[in-house]
Length: 148
Length: 217
Image (tube, rainbow over all chains, first blue to last red; front, side):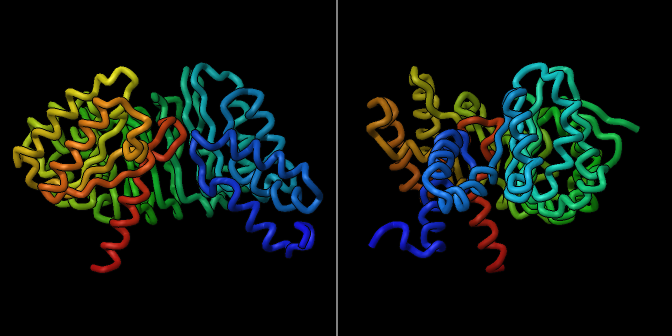
């Protein structure tokens, strides 16, 4: 029996069980690498692995934040994102400007982790002040820190 | 009114109706304190306050409706020193509280007469083995029978794998396991946060047990 003849649901289960279900800093890079590789195997694999790839997004630099915004703004990324983590270890002048835009894409998020540093401030009230953020009804877990 | 601190601003109260689990550190508590109540967090079940332990932090909690919020929590994760600075806030709920202590604080912890039931030891291991004497003293303290209320001890899961550690660390962990067994203190090995900025600071196992025990009651 060839792999391609397996039922889609079974392939989905295999892909899901090949990566950690929850976020941990120890496993994040490997998880994303595995999913990116799986996306390149076939159309079916891409269809199944890509939502998992977008499910957890960890942004820790201006470049990764722009990539996150792009992913969250896409149709598939916006639907799939469930966990969003943003860490900033030093002054991040780019962050406050992008935060409102980011919040607009977080309506489906169930876990939000924000760690900032430096003098720039994030307006937390924007989490619920924007119309689309009002539907942050799925938010179950939040972690807000500054110092490490 | 606009509150700001810790890199965040809060121009209006934050109501998070479905929020189940919340972690804040001392700097964010400064602006979040006014939202730390049942009205703003009606569904909150698990709360972790990191580095919240000094008099200023305790006064901040006293000035809010935190005393009401704690009654709805299934689990609360707190620095052990908060039990020293604000005992009246926590006294009735110690069985729901997982206190955490860093190894460097353990000697001070053992000097306090706290009725801690559940304790998590964090960041026990370093490459130089500096923590070994502190752990030795802690194990001896348990052996001496002074940890009267302690029922469970949460340790990093990697400590179960002797090949990862030096002989010194393995020896002291074995001693800790033995004295805890003698005193009927359960050791729970669990993967702890590696990157405190992003990994969960809340013990999933402690939450699970607290939920289960609440369901039984």
